[in-house]
Image (tube, rainbow, N blue to C red; front, top):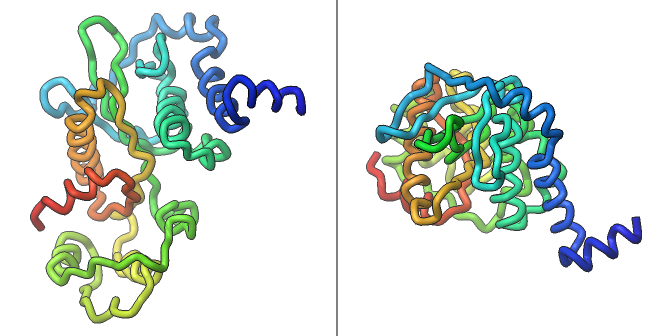
Length: 260
């Protein structure tokens, strides 16, 4: 192990970068005999919705059981949907943003309900993943990152806009909300109060790990399509309220610019 660590530091700079590259390598170089045996089967989902003519979006109930193959910008050959999403998560969140904490939780991205946005191109029979996001129901709220202490800060100042609270109450199956009930409360207390105000918990969910990939020149356009497709897909599935964690300033500004 000492020798491996020495080599990892020499080649990659640190052990964490080495682990990241190794996880990507394992996904990209799975036994090709299995891959070739399955590649001759092209599976399409006839229930996907189309957005902006050539982009498809859908909610997949469990990506671990989905047998379709997808291209990604990080592999020369297509991968099973589950592997493709894990690979994109590693390449974008861990390799690009250095969120090495996710190395211990890769299995979260390999199963369960996910939103996917993808595109068919003229040269490939397999679609290319543009965006994905993990959807978690309230039945496993204890696993939600939204309520994890890691994503809390005592210095946050909640935006308790009265119109926003009124709009939230009207648009969702929530108990009436008033600004006064949240005054002098921490962000953790406010978020929990909001959650427990939801009368029908099946109409709420968490959406996290939103990835955007593809051509860099189209990054903002793909981000817009992903947010629009995600909102439409969740609404069509009966979700009225979504808890999410946003780290991209452009996304925050996008939602702030929208009307009620």
